[in-house]
Length: 191
Image (cartoon, rainbow, N blue to C red):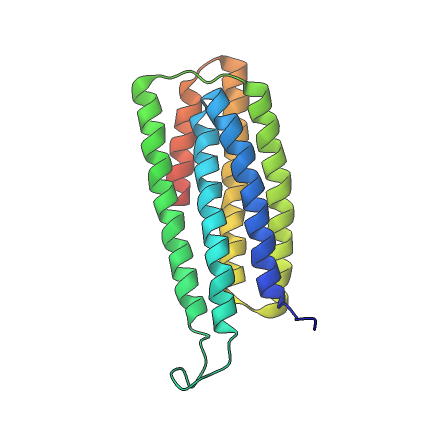
């Protein structure tokens, strides 16, 4: 027997999978390079992955038929999931600010700029296509969770671009504080 999966659930699986790939790419490069901006982006992708997985279960639960306890169904769980996603976005912004301030205070050096730049270009391309996909699913289904996920990944698109600019400027000027300052800016923007 073949079971049908809703477009919303498929979208959360796609976004979880993309986020997982981005976590590994950014984490490996971020640790190797010492770039706060790339590490902050990796942490953000890790939170994205967790939220997308949570969204899958929220959508799955909301699609269940009404029962004796929930006579009108469980659709409201999607609104709760959207609020949780907003909270996670705020927490990730605060953490990124903390890491950036720590790097500014300690003055650590960013290395391996070329692999970091390639990792961020990859992230931007993949995230752009993910956002386009999520927007199509959100438009087709009018699902608040997928709309929130698309918005979330759209902010990631901008923060990934900011990381890329920061890495380019560090490469051109040799000023490692640029990495931390852009990380700080990303954190403030996310909040």
